[in-house]
Picture 1 (cartoon, rainbow, N blue to C red):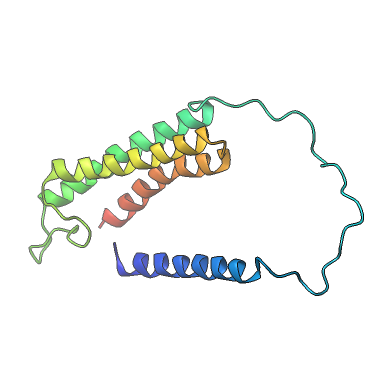
Picture 2: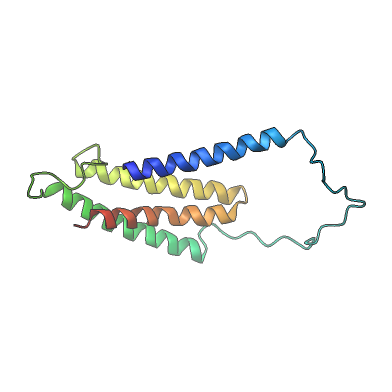
Length: 152
């Protein structure tokens, strides 16, 4: 993980922790000027819920194709960079790769994509379909970022 990525993760983590702490402080208190509802109205959207979609629908198939294609490109570029050195005698990938073996790196990248897809399936099974869609596209985004960072 680069320094910028680490700082970004720490900032997001800190913001989420502070929001959770503020909710805990206000959980047992009633706001002084809170309006008290006189009657409870029925929910506005009380129609039938939308039919569940299959996990590998059109969007899922496109995301899987993007994942496989970008994973292949990312793996090829990364292995090429591992096998070639720059003028200083260094590979362009020492800042994040813990192994200089191409097979280990490709397995690491594939496990990363499998983790994203497993989390997407878990979100699908629990009814969090917006989260599912985001997680489906995080694998291709990760590979695209790797391709962009590897090109020199």
